[in-house]
View 1: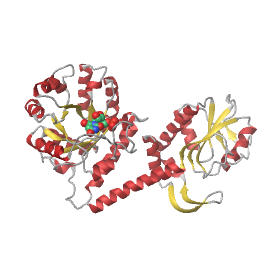
View 2: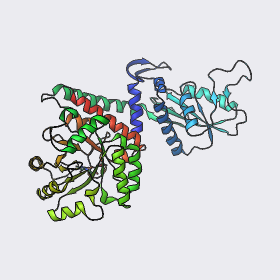
View 3: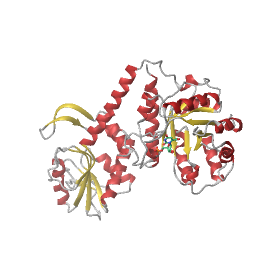
Length: 452
Ligand code: 6AU
């Protein structure tokens, strides 16, 4: 399920379109659930996203050359939205026959050169309304090639209705609802069981460290109402620039792996720096330095990437000791640069131990250039930032070693400050929508974590 599907299920619940209890349905049967999607149409964004999902479905089914028609009344807003967005002719089916003029049941047919029609409806319960409408199209010699419904809540598919495709099944909604409830429960349990001192807001922590980047990021998060870092692990810098021009205003950090770039170009890099100033985000090169000192210096300042010229943040593995961070402390620009120490990792099978993490924290405390840690939890005091990668709302990993946890888990339960989201944004169908989704989840979770 992609972020747009999550978004629609989320709005269905938030707009009270789904209720649990004892209900009698239109066909007389009893149900434990009530679904009425009418409230959705008051949100243009929801209609737009539903139209996008319909478009994907139609492409998947290779349906072409049709006119679109919404079944009255609930299907009409989506059919009209689709018609406008995707430049597709539409016809209009009446609920009751017109009593004057041509006595039409379907409007818009005159001069129409298409012979196929695609129906749109919001919910299918038994399929009776769908069946009843077919006769009107037959009468006009239009072939109904299929129906797309937003929600299929049929208990069983009787096979009576052909070619009904749905964006969601009742099970999807139930599954999402229990996932949501579990998260809320987890959040409430956490909030009620919190005995430790309550968390300080980003704003309240400004000044706890002299590190300028620490203070800058705390202020930036408050200003943008965002604690989202995006890991743009593309192999093209041009693509990174393009995506950043769209999402840059919503994030506080962009994380890069410059050594996987295939079209590296210092000029383009400078343009990204300019963009970072215009849209206010920080550039983090995830190089994880871990060399002997002299090699580190060359890796940081030299080679083709000249990282020190454009990266605000860089990170270090301390497996080789503190020589790299010691050197960094002397050569970084405290005005707009800082270091992060990798204290824990997200992937399966990593060798990080409690003892190692503690040693990393102790080293971190000794160097003013260190503004925080890459970690899975808040591992030390409020004078450091905690950046957590391995974030995704679907709990599956990536079929390799990556392990994901939700923004709620990271921010409320594990107490981190900044979520780093990679492929759950870059590989989603709409980068901007998933950016906004993670921004909202991240910020709401942070606000919840502040409650006593
Ligand atoms: O969200 P993903 O799985 O697409 O990407 C996660 C990003 C990758 C990793 O190199 C990085 O986060 N990462 C790190 C970092 C930031 O150092 C540490 C870690 O423990 N796990 C991890 O995935 O670019």
